[in-house]
Length: 280
Image: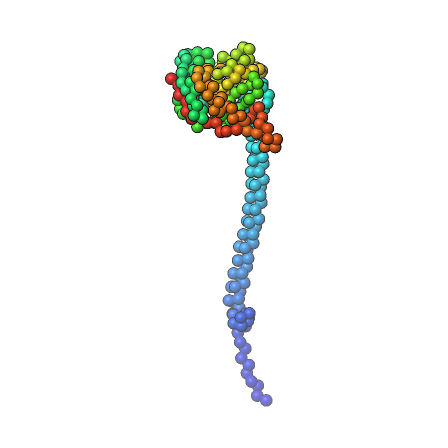
């Protein structure tokens, strides 16, 4: 019987599409597959890590936002007459004093000028002899244009507690930590701030926390002195106060959204803005 010689083909592996691939080629593909898998697994690990970091960042941001909301709410005006013009004190005393003008800027004399609020021009007089540090600071703010465009964020309407507070750095009255100073100057001994008085706002119990904020007294007001004393009186409104009451103050405060009742101490119903300020 003659044996038919069988020709053995080179070892091969058949792929799914019916083509024939050599062992070396298949080994190369296996290596490539493993390399791709390693890269993929690395990406998955990095993705998980990035997700963890992102979640942590969201938690931190949320926490800070919550603290910011708490600080804002905690720093708003209260109905306590003793805190009629308070604003939080700075946390960094060095930073708070580095921009304060020298008291000599007030020149120890009276200054006259104007303060325009919502189109109402008020004549003003500042007493540089009675309150040299505070008047110097206000003169500097006026001359550098700080007050133009700033708002009056607080209005009180209770009997014997009638003030309009203005000049906050951020428009909320939350304090001016980049610019605060002392001491208290020219505060009334009887704690009575007569109509037309212009005085500086400060934090309760802190004589060195005067800043940009001031308040205009539009009706005789009693503000009891606290542990630090009274409030620095820098001067007075000499004209236009009645018009300010008629055009701006009379609108009252913003009603409480839950009760519909306008508080005696709160934000003005209509936005109140300082249009311009001059002094000479």
